[in-house]
Length: 563
Image 1 (tube, rainbow, N blue to C red):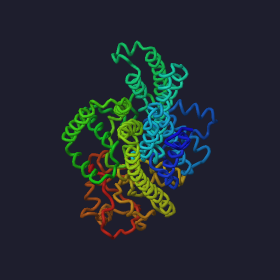
Image 2: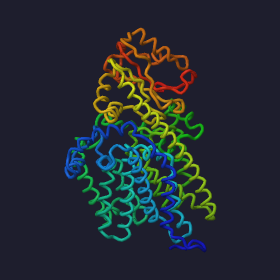
Image 3: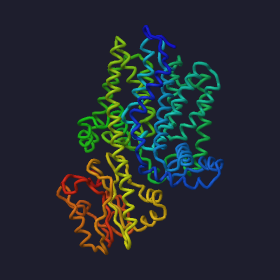
Image 4: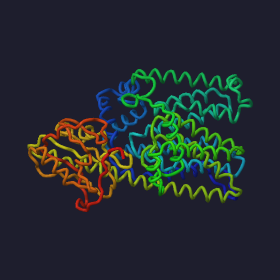
């Protein structure tokens, strides 16, 4: 029991209870969602484990990647356990996402308590303020609300635990804390590769708080540093052995992710985008228009970003709060692994890369808020920011709910197509993406297999080609599927006429795409998969998403052509 003012308040239980309320309140809507995109693929890849004994399956999870691109065994472990106990009931998968986020936030709360000056009244509120700023940040929606991306939350959970234990080790010099910190480091890597930065953040903390001489030579001669380097290096060697055995490579990913792009301009742009995204929710008015403008003026964006960042650092040069600077260093260091990617500042996606960096940002923001002269001003300002963040987070989860409804409705509506007799070839106009969030972009075959078994596999084999479409407005969709007649042997002319009938904003689909298609070719309309015109083949049936008001003339799709 800790006394605050004239009240005796059990700070720990109350704080954790508040975090729980925010987690459940903001994310409970997920429990009505269905699987999305990569969820289906991961379920299919892990299906062979169901034929193994429990021990053999657990060993296999760490001996193999069960993913063509990444080695992230803890994500596979979560999917395996959920499938064993709850089958394909998506509600429990989303419940696990909420629980993991809550556990991660609690670990972060304990970590921040170690950083806070608890002798001051402000210090007593600092942990819960920082934790709530982290908990409700709208950029977490992709990591928490997309089951496949729980790898980011798992990585964050063990990252926070590892750092917490390292701080305890620095204060007590007890080797057990360092041992468990190293184990947490391994578990963080098992969640996602960006956990690799944990030792850097640990050493940054030690240099800021404990080191009397910050020269590299003196720091290395320190006993704490040397033992920590040995422990973390041992973990990294073991992880690399397991990774190479399971995935076949030490650095990068499989497939297209193996082509690491170390363009300085790209990395600078991604870093600046990340810093903007950490502070601003994705749907702030004007943000999308600014993103569109700067997408065509990258050099200008980078120049303005460097000037703004330099100005902020210059103004903060005399700011002596070590906790603030530790949070800033944390945020920057943990962004390094994601600079090879892209961050959608104005979209739902990209936030998964920021789960761990956002913890450093929350510490910085809480530190700034604690500088008000009165505790009331601190709590009022913090409360307003938390309220605004929460509103954007809940709105994003409502959008995720709409995305899930469209995806599930489209898939379940395909049962009508399965029951049509005599069809041979099928064209699928697929709702693929909304605000950067994948719906069915790369998972139709897996989803058909899971939902309809052999009948779904048969339908997938009859698909002549797929058109991947951006969804502009989820509200325009009915959660059903409509097949256009029982067409038989549609030739090139009538097929083209069909597409010309579906006119949106003055252009037909066929004219907008500028391509025709070859049988058995799945075509992404941005031209990545084919580079020349192919023959539009005969098909028997065209499947498109059903719209609530097809005759309204409103823009329903935006074709993925690089816009």
